[in-house]
Image (cartoon, rainbow, N blue to C red; front, side, top):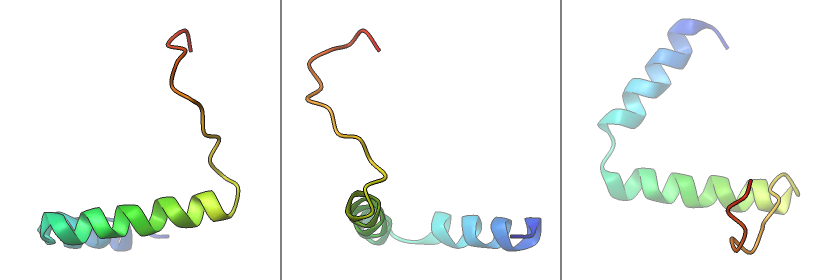
Length: 48
């Protein structure tokens, strides 16, 4: 992706209401999880 397009997307996201950004984040997280690209932990070990 060229720099201009990346900056344009970043600007658009900054201008969106928080609720829309939160929904985009939720959908993105679900997609990454469905593809197996997230390793979930129980959060009990802060050593890492």
